[in-house]
Length: 277
Ligand SMILES: [Zn+2]
Ligand SMILES: [Zn+2]
Image (cartoon, rainbow, N blue to C red; front, side, top):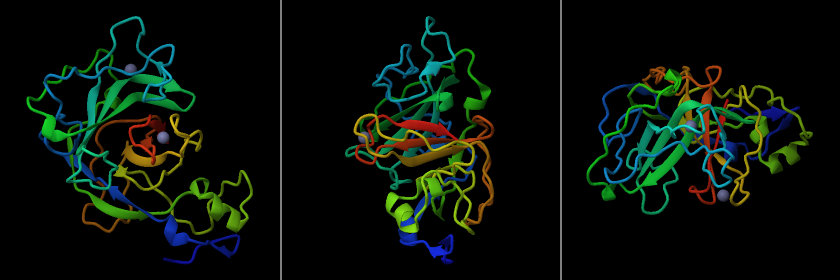
């Protein structure tokens, strides 16, 4: 790696800052319920109620989502959620599966919700043990008024890995101190590689549109970690694999943004936060 500097000072611990992200490269397909995908059928038990929008008014302080003002009428029926993504541990062991689970399911309430930090679908994560699923549920139709931009096309993945460096706002405190970076400084170091928009697991947040704010865990205070990025556009970057861009899933988040899901490194079942960047 090229020696990167900040104001002429080499950046200490640079290699420790590298995170390997799994770029998903979505591509149109017809995934089965027992496969990883965007927007395909979920391995959801037939006897388990289909999930509904978790957003309530007044906001539920324990809700697993901070998109707490809902765009749907709160005195009407609660909208059902739709399948956004599914990831199996066999395909993506990099995800922080809790003990006894091997599949992560991501659902959207596909209407607008907003909070000071979020404008988009409400998001719910379900970590599940696939061995416990017998009969598979038939999903209900998307709720009335669903935003077309929150309903993905069915996609399968052609993943590859890519090394990423954080933006300055994500530098660890020690690195900032060692470099004497003043509070509030926001310019990345000279020659710093850019983080582009693409769907991925792990890695760093691009922070190209949004500011990094309030990423502490509501349960334990730990700093939440970038875990999943769902991108409106799949930009071509030098990830070095044969797939060039991947086909966008057809969803569209605020200003062609990326919907980032942050989880707690201490306990992944603590409430997540969602930031569209
Ligand atoms: Zn909702
Ligand atoms: Zn926590």
